[in-house]
Length: 127
Image (cartoon, rainbow, N blue to C red; front, side, top):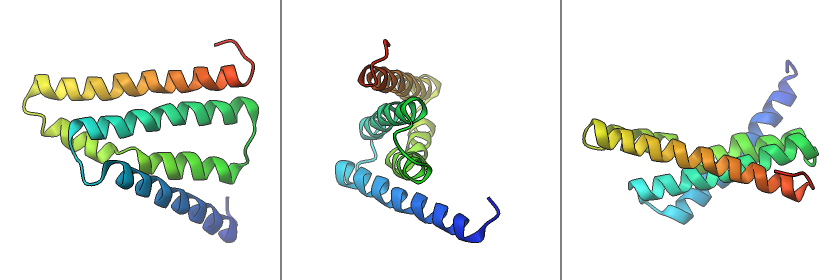
Protein backbone atom coordinates (compact mmCIF):
# COMPACT_ATOMS: atom_id res chain seq x y z
CA UNK A 1 0.00 0.00 0.00
CA UNK A 2 2.02 2.96 -1.28
CA UNK A 3 -0.83 5.46 -1.57
CA UNK A 4 -0.41 7.92 1.36
CA UNK A 5 -4.15 8.65 1.53
CA UNK A 6 -4.94 4.93 1.76
CA UNK A 7 -2.34 4.55 4.53
CA UNK A 8 -3.81 7.41 6.54
CA UNK A 9 -7.29 5.98 6.03
CA UNK A 10 -6.16 2.54 7.24
CA UNK A 11 -4.41 3.97 10.30
CA UNK A 12 -7.50 6.06 11.11
CA UNK A 13 -9.78 3.01 10.92
CA UNK A 14 -7.46 1.02 13.20
CA UNK A 15 -7.12 3.94 15.63
CA UNK A 16 -10.91 4.31 15.83
CA UNK A 17 -11.20 0.59 16.59
CA UNK A 18 -8.44 0.91 19.17
CA UNK A 19 -10.34 3.69 20.89
CA UNK A 20 -13.47 1.53 21.02
CA UNK A 21 -11.64 -1.56 22.33
CA UNK A 22 -9.63 0.30 24.97
CA UNK A 23 -12.74 2.17 26.10
CA UNK A 24 -14.73 -1.07 26.37
CA UNK A 25 -11.94 -2.66 28.41
CA UNK A 26 -11.82 0.33 30.74
CA UNK A 27 -15.60 0.43 31.14
CA UNK A 28 -15.79 -3.31 31.79
CA UNK A 29 -12.75 -3.66 34.03
CA UNK A 30 -12.16 -0.15 35.34
CA UNK A 31 -8.75 0.09 36.87
CA UNK A 32 -8.67 -3.58 37.85
CA UNK A 33 -5.34 -5.11 37.04
CA UNK A 34 -5.71 -8.45 38.76
CA UNK A 35 -5.18 -11.76 37.06
CA UNK A 36 -8.90 -12.53 36.80
CA UNK A 37 -9.83 -9.25 35.12
CA UNK A 38 -6.96 -9.49 32.65
CA UNK A 39 -7.74 -13.13 31.88
CA UNK A 40 -11.42 -12.29 31.36
CA UNK A 41 -10.60 -9.48 28.92
CA UNK A 42 -8.22 -11.74 27.02
CA UNK A 43 -10.62 -14.70 26.84
CA UNK A 44 -13.54 -12.55 25.68
CA UNK A 45 -11.29 -10.92 23.07
CA UNK A 46 -10.08 -14.33 21.86
CA UNK A 47 -13.64 -15.63 21.58
CA UNK A 48 -14.72 -12.59 19.56
CA UNK A 49 -11.58 -12.82 17.42
CA UNK A 50 -12.33 -16.45 16.58
CA UNK A 51 -15.92 -15.57 15.77
CA UNK A 52 -15.10 -12.50 13.68
CA UNK A 53 -12.04 -13.80 11.84
CA UNK A 54 -13.61 -17.12 10.91
CA UNK A 55 -16.82 -15.39 9.87
CA UNK A 56 -14.89 -12.92 7.73
CA UNK A 57 -12.64 -15.56 6.20
CA UNK A 58 -15.40 -17.97 5.24
CA UNK A 59 -18.40 -15.78 4.78
CA UNK A 60 -16.75 -12.65 3.45
CA UNK A 61 -19.46 -10.57 5.07
CA UNK A 62 -17.32 -7.53 5.79
CA UNK A 63 -14.87 -5.42 3.89
CA UNK A 64 -11.21 -4.70 4.58
CA UNK A 65 -11.79 -1.58 6.70
CA UNK A 66 -14.40 -3.28 8.87
CA UNK A 67 -12.05 -6.23 9.40
CA UNK A 68 -9.22 -3.89 10.42
CA UNK A 69 -11.53 -1.90 12.70
CA UNK A 70 -12.76 -5.04 14.47
CA UNK A 71 -9.59 -7.15 14.62
CA UNK A 72 -6.48 -4.95 14.64
CA UNK A 73 -8.27 -2.03 16.28
CA UNK A 74 -11.07 -3.05 18.63
CA UNK A 75 -10.17 -6.58 19.69
CA UNK A 76 -6.45 -5.90 19.93
CA UNK A 77 -7.21 -3.04 22.31
CA UNK A 78 -9.84 -4.96 24.25
CA UNK A 79 -7.32 -7.64 25.11
CA UNK A 80 -4.36 -6.71 27.21
CA UNK A 81 -1.09 -8.45 26.47
CA UNK A 82 0.92 -5.94 28.49
CA UNK A 83 -1.25 -6.58 31.56
CA UNK A 84 -0.93 -10.32 31.03
CA UNK A 85 2.85 -10.07 30.68
CA UNK A 86 3.13 -7.94 33.83
CA UNK A 87 0.93 -10.34 35.81
CA UNK A 88 3.01 -13.31 34.63
CA UNK A 89 6.26 -11.55 35.54
CA UNK A 90 4.96 -10.58 38.99
CA UNK A 91 3.18 -13.86 39.74
CA UNK A 92 5.59 -14.86 42.46
CA UNK A 93 7.73 -17.70 41.22
CA UNK A 94 8.08 -20.16 38.37
CA UNK A 95 5.02 -22.25 39.25
CA UNK A 96 2.72 -19.23 39.59
CA UNK A 97 4.10 -17.72 36.39
CA UNK A 98 3.53 -20.99 34.54
CA UNK A 99 -0.02 -21.06 35.88
CA UNK A 100 -0.80 -17.52 34.72
CA UNK A 101 0.66 -18.18 31.28
CA UNK A 102 -1.01 -21.58 30.96
CA UNK A 103 -4.44 -20.33 31.97
CA UNK A 104 -4.30 -17.29 29.67
CA UNK A 105 -3.08 -19.21 26.65
CA UNK A 106 -5.21 -22.28 27.31
CA UNK A 107 -8.46 -20.41 27.85
CA UNK A 108 -7.64 -18.02 25.00
CA UNK A 109 -7.08 -20.91 22.60
CA UNK A 110 -10.30 -22.63 23.69
CA UNK A 111 -12.19 -19.34 23.32
CA UNK A 112 -10.93 -18.91 19.73
CA UNK A 113 -12.04 -22.47 18.92
CA UNK A 114 -15.44 -21.83 20.49
CA UNK A 115 -15.87 -18.60 18.52
CA UNK A 116 -14.84 -20.35 15.31
CA UNK A 117 -17.26 -23.19 15.99
CA UNK A 118 -20.11 -20.75 16.61
CA UNK A 119 -19.29 -18.87 13.38
CA UNK A 120 -19.31 -22.16 11.46
CA UNK A 121 -22.70 -23.12 12.85
CA UNK A 122 -24.12 -19.69 12.07
CA UNK A 123 -22.82 -20.10 8.53
CA UNK A 124 -24.48 -23.51 8.15
CA UNK A 125 -21.26 -25.57 8.40
CA UNK A 126 -20.68 -28.49 10.67
CA UNK A 127 -18.12 -27.72 13.41
